[in-house]
Image 1 (tube, rainbow, N blue to C red):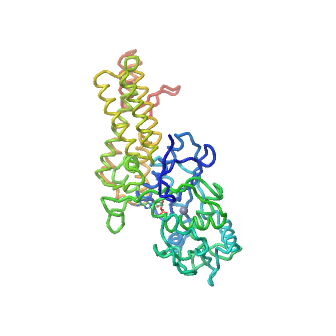
Image 2 (cartoon, rainbow, N blue to C red):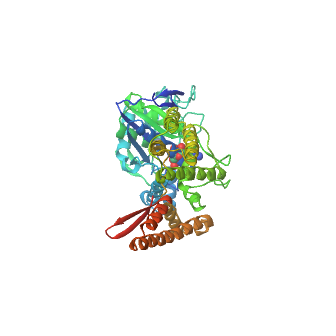
Image 3 (cartoon, rainbow, N blue to C red):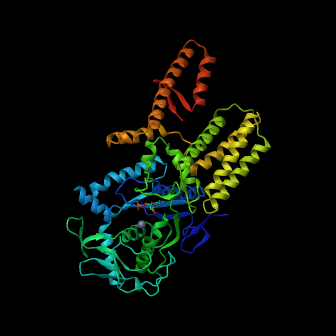
Amino acid sequence: MALRLYNTLSGKVEEFQPMNNNEVRMYVCGPTVYDYGHIGNFRTFVAVDVLRRFLRQSGYTVHHVMNITDVDDKIIHNAAHAGLSVQQYTAKYEKAFLEDAATLNIEQPILVRATEHIPEMAQFVADLEKKGFAYRAEDGSYYFRIAKFPGYGKLSKKDFAGMEDGARVDVDDYDKDNARDFALWKAPKPGEASWETPIGRGRPGWHIECSVMSMQQLGETFDLHAGGEDLIFPHHENEIAQSESMTGKPFVRFWFHARFLLVEGEKMSKSLGNFFTLRDLVLKGHKPSSIRFLLASVPYRNQLNFTFDGLKQAAVSVERLRNFQSRLDTGQFPQGASEQMTELARDTLKRFWSGMEDDLNTAQAQAAIFDMVRKGNAAIDAGQLKRDDAAALLDVLERFDQIFAVLEDDETEKMKKILNWAKSEKREKDVSNTLLQTMEAQELSDAGIEQKIAEMENARRSRNFQSSDAIRAELMAAGIVVENTKDGVRWKRK
Ligand code: AMP
Ligand code: ZN
């Protein structure tokens, strides 16, 4: 079997095969870096990360490129307002985005920045003009002539018959149902950033950025292009128009779009007070692993309703997985294997895998693993689990975690960094007691660990090995790895 993916272009679930042997070339529209990333953004980026990880687990090499949109109307406006250059303004948010993505264990794609490709974009516009697909307006802006591209509307399934030739729109005031010639290149406005190029002074439109950078990195036709569902129209429709007019070849084979997330049943918005960045949630005391787990739990094409109850449940689920892992890791099991558990491992892997192959059905994959955890725990309680069973179940758990990435408990450091950031931004008032208590409990247990290690060392020095071994086992069960080095005993959290 192979991965079956929904393709927005065909409107069908199709079997996915890359163009070139084992190599998948994919592009995802990255963040517009004018503010901190919110959980809606991360819903999409976690969905793409799950896709990337599953492709790799399926044996593909994934050539994954993401742009950083660091030129756009909001950025230019905000930067001018703050009296900063575009680069100065965006650097802070780009860094924050990459840190947040790492906090959520999102693997980093190859990054490309719009500001580093301005000459190529100007050249692309010039070439489109030469081919008759673009024209220059009186103010020096360039527009794409959509009447020249009959395929316009094929991705968004909009029927633009009878559209008005030559009617134009500024990229950001798009009327969703009326096709208009869109800006490829915008003439400079006083006080706003612009670049000197052979087609004149100005700046690129948002759509041209992605066409130019994706084809430069991945070729004229590539396998996958991803983003949130709001990008289908006009952004991706316009990317197709620009790229296919230029090359005369299909631009992208599979279009992957994640459905928009709701928060507590409503569209997230600042005015409703249900707008959360990743950092807001961590400051409220939620662990990054719970957030990632919840974002990944609903298949990407289903509506995810993000709730605080759901987040609490996700935390419990992650704890259950971690506890099961540490029971398997540290338990003393009799030699051998039991038929029942061998079968459980095999069936779980099959269910997990077939769920993921079915258009990334993450809910089925998770259900399969939790069944395994329940049965595995029962077998341990009943004293029926054997050593080879533990290894087989751990192997399944690890494969699951290659996609979901929540088992490693490295969250104290991540949460501490966000706490320090809040202090540096003078946002102490947003720091919840829950977060402070979690951190304090952690500090205490750090001191507790040190004390246990001192006791263990004392026991060893007085040759009471039974006692020192017991302490070491206790620490191991709590996920603490103790190592003897030539500089003395060192410990770390697993
Ligand atoms: P932006 O920074 O606005 O360019 O958005 C970055 C990515 O987040 C894009 O792929 C958007 O489609 C996606 N996105 C924005 N809001 C949401 C949301 N509420 N749910 C899911 N994805 C979103
Ligand atoms: Zn894009």
